[in-house]
Image (cartoon, helix red, strand yellow):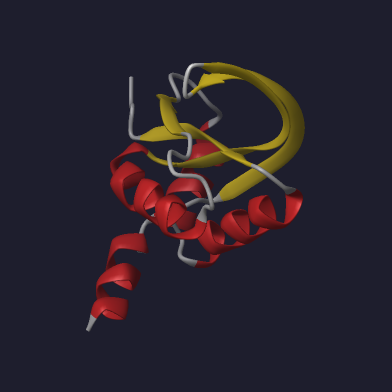
Length: 116
């Protein structure tokens, strides 16, 4: 079983932020695909129960890119504690996973070029 790939959940407070993060992850080759959907969230924040309409990003990428994905989200998200959690993909079609890998394989090289 190959656990190189994963799905990452990222929430955003509005559609504009969600689209900005999704496009940035794709442009930086940190994700191969990002789905955006609206969700109703209920959560505890600073000892209060909150309820909000949010946008959930479902990003497909390599598990090894978690740190870069989380850092990108932190730099482009308005919340103090943005959600970025990852789950391994335990099974998937070979062609889809090959495409996922090819779409993200040079992400670290692109990021290191941008640092110089």
